[in-house]
Length: 310
Image 1 (tube, helix red, strand yellow):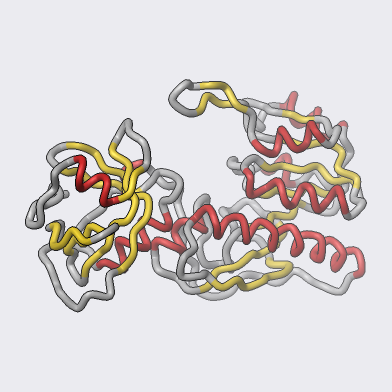
Image 2: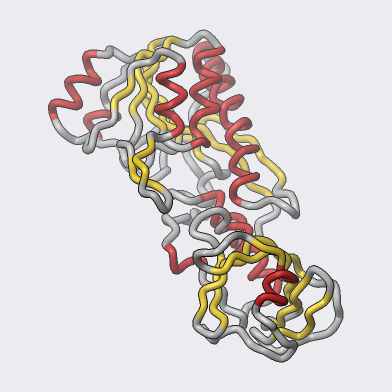
């Protein structure tokens, strides 16, 4: 089958690799334009671009995908099917109608739950215990197409958005190949989505701001879901502090929201709306990542000090 592949981040590399290794004919790859990243603002290509080029595949990086010129380029590829994995833009109807065998999307949730751009992050932030992968035929809506296959994945207690994304990317790659085989063998049929839908909009920087009046568990889930971007953060004396690692403390003691209740060994125990949160790794803005104990010593923190209110 001639496949035109749309994808951008690390998450999408596994599916592209699986297509190549399975013997499918990937005719070209479409990905986002190179962007400036990091403190040095060095222009960097998307992970999918790097993998595609190393695999000898043609790569397109259009600034826009709704022009007649781009549609003509894609039509010239004569794809049987378009596969989309975390591309980052909604495909126009003209592209959806292009391939005779339709457009297949690999989505990192059990649809109709967590439709949208950040399903992995929001599942973690909402404290979900399971998530998964769905393959579906794409339509004009936002992740509303008919479902082809699903696979459930357990969210581990120590998962963050980076680790869960890696695991789901491999599950997605495997499910994509099984979906294509099932369609070719006519052993699977698309079914409409059923159940109550929920949404996972793109994260904004301010989504990482810690509200100490939430429970320790909710703040812990926020830290997991926003790692590595936008990152969970708070302020202490006006200084921005990124919280890299933390844990819900087993101490029975309750504290005041945002108050440093105890500095013990490698932990800073902070009161929340319910329970204590143990900070173990932090990163002051513009500084290196450090242990909570090093941070406490360097700032001469005292028990009873409080993080700034939201």
